[in-house]
Length: 366
Image (cartoon, rainbow, N blue to C red; front, side, top):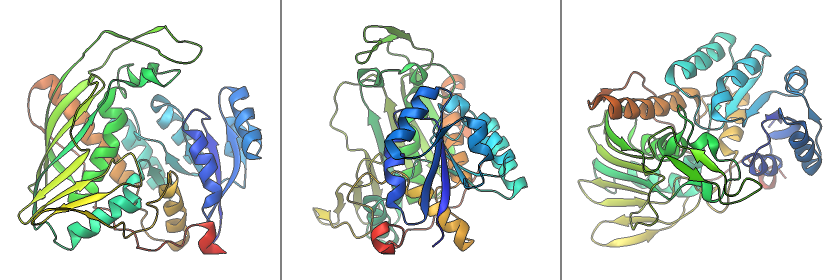
């Protein structure tokens, strides 16, 4: 399988796992890194043995096929459009954009140019979630009728040295930050969402940074930090969702699905591993039957997109899926403001399941 060259734009916290994982895939090669902070790019390039260049230089490189866009959410569209204009495919961290309108510009520009758009999260491609998908597709819980998706924690200022963008208006907050993992996992299981109803609140007007050189500095909160709602899927299933930066502790599991014949407990959608539990007559742990369930495989969606380009097939963590998930979140936030049930404006195809075995890693290529 041909290796596609990857150029990383954005050398923040999340870039380390991507840069470390890219060489683990047999069809990817890290070519260069860039960041508006030259010193951050130099440090990242040195750590991974690749050139640190300017954004313009990276976009002009002939050995870069895909731009991995790891900038802050507010810059995703600007950087993505520049990459498309330079003839590059784009794979972005989540969310795809700060708004559906901006994301549609990106998707339409890529389609017009004959290029691919991909987006995190790709954790739903991991072994745990693919094992759960197989149980669903086998009919082990019958027809799914309902579910829950729960992400509640005390806020990212506890660990992130620069958490401002988590609280700074559009594109911020727990739903926009962590919601993509939970909603993508549910769309992967149940298909697209039809309507959304939600309510929201802001627990505090400011947050205090707990770590790093800015420890003790207050960050203003400009967006709801606790959002709860109902997702009504085209399939008829109803899923209760709660995302919060205002909860210190709780006992809810991340994802559960309830069907006419049983129930399924699905691990943390921010991880590739974990134990799937199935209730038929009693709760039982289920084996992980698919690859990529043993580690943090961030970049798997990027590798699947590269393989899909080579094989001329749809990739799974695609722009339409990311756009639909963004539409779910934006509709939920709009529902918070209007107090009304909101109808989704987008649709997507339920992603194809992954094969049980992989051909994407260095070990498999050897």
